[in-house]
Image (cartoon, rainbow, N blue to C red):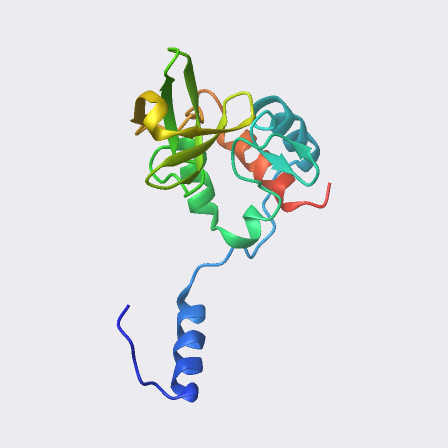
Length: 166
């Protein structure tokens, strides 16, 4: 972004405007069964995602997801997880010098090294010079939850659980 000479008043007016047009979370209570949603979350999501202190760390923490993303964005992320992969969750496949195959998501990377969380949820670091192969994947490690795999009612139950204090 180029430098500017806006006075403080104009900067705050711009920030206020941008906040007013931004979508921030789900403003209404989702019609679903949060108890059933908790069970569905445990069965389908908790291996990689967490809510509160429970669940995995391979995928994003979903504790506040309903406060920061719209219902449409959450639904799209579940139905089509590869459509928008957040920074810190880009999938990668690595072949080490001794031909070990490691898959995971990129946590940090620079010109000389890469740090990933592997699919067993261990944080691992590699020197790029020592790698035999490094492939950036296009598809998310998260499975696609089509309507036949997770009905709209079940999806609402999970989102209701995420929205609840359970």
